[in-house]
Image (tube, rainbow, N blue to C red; front, top):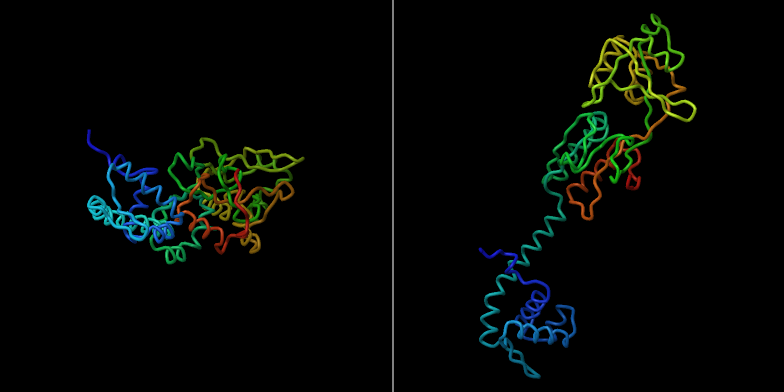
Length: 318
């Protein structure tokens, strides 16, 4: 069977003893080598004796005043010294690379989250971290982050998977039922969410779901859903909002996205008394002992971005 590199590398005491030998051979002084290694001279002497026993050869001549290499020690030192430098350089370069964000970060984001929290940071992030590639998937499907091969996701709090680390990006959200003034003039205003079943509504379907989303409202300390009807079913919220703006029917959208239209008089909201807030946007990712610098850089950028309202919010496990 072919030898494997891992089988030939020194392990445990072998590595420590070889390191001790290299230090003594380099300085030809037990006291100086012990100082560099951060051990006592007696401990260093014991490591050298154990190493010589392990290799079966005397490697050093020792007197009370001098240290010199035996022939075997000279040959061994000549061979291992370049390898030790190469190993040290490789570890140093790996450590430096690990400290400098680099590599690919795979991101999954809901469309509204991408518009609000990711798009504003793209230019500054690319300039600050030129060695990081952001591979971003934008859709409203609730995917399994780990199974999908993603490093991080940005989504609303109510659909974060269990055992994920989550960081709040902003305040709570709420959805409003809205329509054009002309629509309400022609069809009247619903007085209760259940009246929506008698109205023309612009419906939205979660990607991957067969049935349209049931509009959610809050009453008597509990949420309830209304399966609305209407002439249009879409899987894109922006198109659904545009349809409501055109007078197709009543739309249902996050307040932030319709606030300007309401202020301009192009849309009118209704049923506000039943429109309660719910957990807003979060950046979430699997628990991990060591986080790649590139992933940490992205998370920090999103947390402190121009549209992140709670950049000081602590991370917590859902």
